[in-house]
Image 1 (cartoon, rainbow, N blue to C red):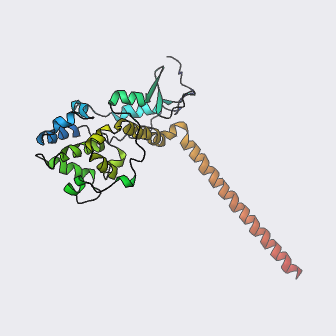
Image 2: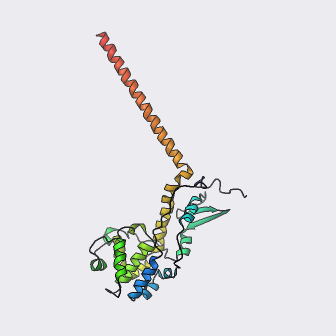
Image 3: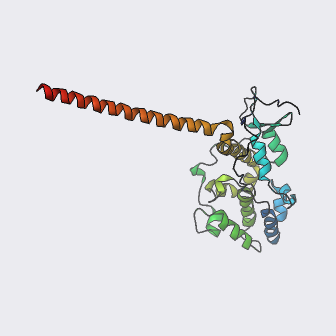
Length: 269
């Protein structure tokens, strides 16, 4: 058996230990069939196939997200001393160093990895949009409501509203962005009013940033015990208890000394 070449590089030294954790995936691959069905009914499927997400309609429905594979991959993260790029994660697989970064995400997704525009989430960009007033009474419609209205569309309505809804659901349902997990964010409604601007938006960069954030932060939270975080926590709690006990003992000594002095004063009088 070959030596462990990553022995001093593991982010989680105890990576072979089982940890009770679960990988949640918020993207719904089966949504693609509903999307294609509705857009076909509304005569807009060709318009979607010419846009930035066109290739995703060709994904086989048999594909599934394997949480166990991602879980075991995250446990095998390594630290490279010479790597200062925060936009990547390295893994030790066999005797190989394997990187996941912007280039790999671009190759896999085929999405626009351009620079995100500054302030695209700012409130001043959010305004009352026609698609909101035509189809929703709630100022912050949920994903479920948006999907329900979209699925009821049977013919072309209000121009390209079905295409706009399809794009919004593609981002929130298929890619499962965190911001749209409950209510659709206002900036997304604002952006979709200009379909050309929506398609030019660097969705690859946006989705990659969200993905990397969760891979680094959420995984670290649940896998921390593999690098001794639980032990450190126990030591911290133990030190806290010991300090509290010492403070109580000190308080008792002070009270005892104060009582003694009081007794001595009374005896002198």
